Length: 217
Image (cartoon, rainbow, N blue to C red; front, side, top):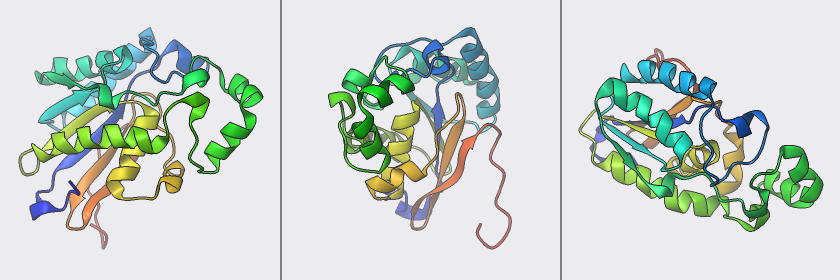
């Protein structure tokens, strides 16, 4: 699904989970099931109140506990049930998982550098970024396809998975995905439907989207 069918003006909000202890320690979480800190729960609660104002129609989330707990806050204020899908989990990074940034660069320096150059790398023997997009983007597309005209989908996932999904939905080449900066905890990106496909309207936002007024609306 490329977002261009019928000009239905649907919207996808890709929301990163709240803070975890491993985020603070700069440990690569990957598919490890790490819960939210108290601050992370507070972040999710605040963000949920904002996102509820967008009147979402559907919420889907990764089945890892940090994403589930974040999604639960939006469910509580909207009354919507959350659909969970393992396809929205963070990238599996094998031997990198549980290591700090410093430990990764010390033990896997060339592999890390190649990844940052945009080369296809199985980080720690794990997934390629394109494989993450292969499993996550279809989940998002399938949920968006079911939206009514003008509807809004909220996807609660993880920073790396959100970046690869955005890259895939925008039709960017994989080596360009790194150009999409990271998401802060409980911030989100917004894709809007245009006549030529999905457009990136907001990135790493913590406030509600504002209309674009001018020649590029």
